[in-house]
Image (cartoon, rainbow, N blue to C red; front, side, top):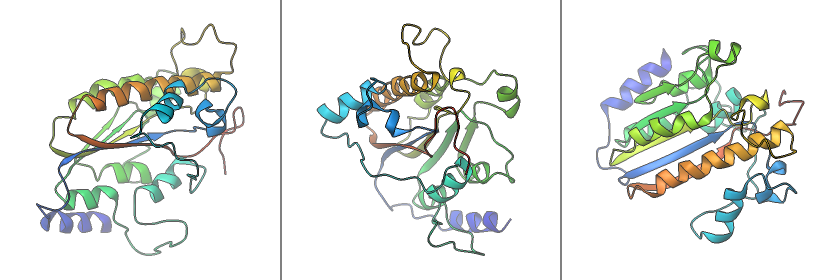
Amino acid sequence: AQGGERRKSVERHVEKESGNDGIYVLILGESHNKRHCSAYGYNLDTTPFMKRVAETEPGFILMQNAFSCHVQTMQVLAYLMTARNQYTKMEGEVPPSIFDVLKYCSYRTVFLSNQYPHGRFDSPVAALASGADKCIWLNTMEDFILWRARLDEALLDPLKKHLDSNRSFIVLHLIGSHGPYFRRYPETFGTDLQWTPYDKSVLYVDTILEKIFGILKQNPKVKAAVYVSDHSEKPGIGHGA
């Protein structure tokens, strides 16, 4: 409730001319271990797109020393997408989210997720996402329980539909390499590879990133895009604290 009142106050004092026009995109990965990425020296070619563009495209920056602030999605995004962090707890305060700041600057904000909401108010991620102008969840908890969760390629068409603004911020939330790994790519994907399901999931994410960046590069309104995973993963064990 406290956060809701603050958001209403922000919306009443929007700065119409603050910031620059353009579309900015944040792509959130899931359980992506860089030690299993060929772009970072892994012996299997799991990230051919990432490796190629890092070597050939000047505008593509491969970060070498990015670290997650936690090992679980909810805690990570509660820090990543707000002014709170693990050093300044801001106890008792309602930290502004990235959506609050961008809405204050008159950006249209979209949260597009291939995961599922735990509940608008009992999940920090769902609560944060509800601060966007448009919040879309492609899956439900039931979809995951019944093994019918969509693949990340399901994000591509909705993404295209939200690239029609002159001034917007879009978050794409992948299911990435979250276990069970063999559920994160098509059954026919990588059948010729003698790889673990986790490595195949990393390769599949790389193909999705290639398609996402291909879509974004075709739109002159897109000014910047960042891909970052929420946290890493120990294949076969997981990412529990």
